[in-house]
Amino acid sequence: MADFLVAALRKLDRAPDAPRAFCEVFMNVLPVSGAAVSTLGEVMGSETLAASDAQAARLDELQFDLGEGPCWDAMATGAPILQPDIAKSGRSRWPSFSDSIVSEGVSSVFAFPLGVGPLRFGAIDLYSTDRVRLDDTQTRHAAAMADVVSRRILRQAITAVGVEPDDTTNAFSRRLVHQATGMVLAQIDVSADDALLVIEGHAFAEGRPMMEIAQEIIGGQLRFSRHGERIEVDR
Amino acid sequence: MNQMTREARLLQTFATLADTLVDDYDLVELLQFLVDTCRDVLDMSAAGILLADARGQLEVVASTSEASMLVEMMQLSAQAGPCVESFRTGHAIAVPDIAASPPEWTQFRDSALSQGFGSVDALPLRLRDVTIGTLNLMRATVGPAPAEDVVAAQAFADVATIGILHERSLRESELITSQLQAALNSRVIIEQAKGVISQVRGIPIDEAFDLMREYARAHQMRLSLVASSLVERTLSL
Image (cartoon, rainbow over all chains, first blue to last red; front, side):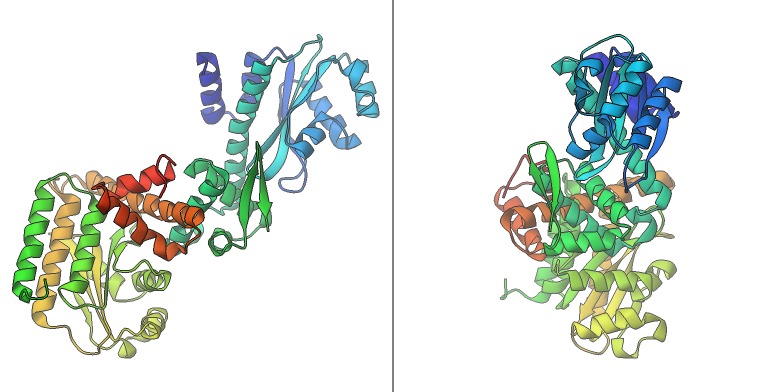
């Protein structure tokens, strides 16, 4: 992995002034003029967590108001949405949104989904006033960066509501959570840390105790599966 | 083995322990050996060792059975029962008749009785004035445990304590905490590995531990290494 990318990922993971710092890191690594990080939909509500400038904030606001745009599509599909030339190719997809931002001087828009495992909860929007494209490597970099941001946002949300097992439950249920973690990491082929976060995220999204989720996983009523890059909940 | 007197088996156990302690050993395996010995040599129905984490919460790190009911009962005893009493006081707590235990222990009592246990002894894992956990001995019968069994079991508990705190100065309390945490963490990985085996082999969680132990023995690997290799997916059973 390139040094600059390692440094960027580390900064995204540890910068104390998150979520503000997220935008800056994206702008340092990618040829864009602005960035905005937003949560979308039911899990965390629709809210802009950070925007690099007024135009980036406006871009997000427009998409919230119109209910259309690349951030919604990124979240719905779980894949990056790349629009290097929005004036040419955006109108058929998002007529109102494209007209508005083209008139404001935006040429290119990119959106990367935020999510962990089967849970999707937002997107990162990047825009440029000059027309730019992201090549495959840059797209991969941005996706890796969005992954780190996703984990951090989910962890913060979980900590805020306190569903972490250490705070709320006893040693026996922690043991069940560890067993469930082992099952999930084998189901979807991720690290133990990520598997635990998937379980925590599921508990968070459903507003239920970790212990219950762990018991369902161990009992086989709840399982996760991987389809390429996508992870889904099976019931 | 059956031909040997109990004294001979005890001696052999201590010889094995001494051998283990002078060598590079796996703590979870050592504790597992101790609880198994309590069951097999001292005729206990079940045994378990609990260690306190950084916040003083007791957690099962080794037990003669991985059956969740047994583990849960020991955790209940660690919340309100002989286990936490022994941990708090640093003394042995004998409960010759579980049915007659105090009302605060209801949850533990009900769980123990429903699993057919009649009596229990909780012994402290203690070095001087620091208690780091407890050894719990369950018997199907009602009545006090034979005095010589309690003496032998306390010696096992002491060996376990030394095994955990070996060659470290007690004054370095941070070090004790980190060693305890290491023992507890290796248990976390063992639980995760049980989950991996259960998922991959389609067997109940409670059966996964035995498979892992058999594999470790057959390949002369440390249990914690087998567990971490399973979790990292570099090994599959």
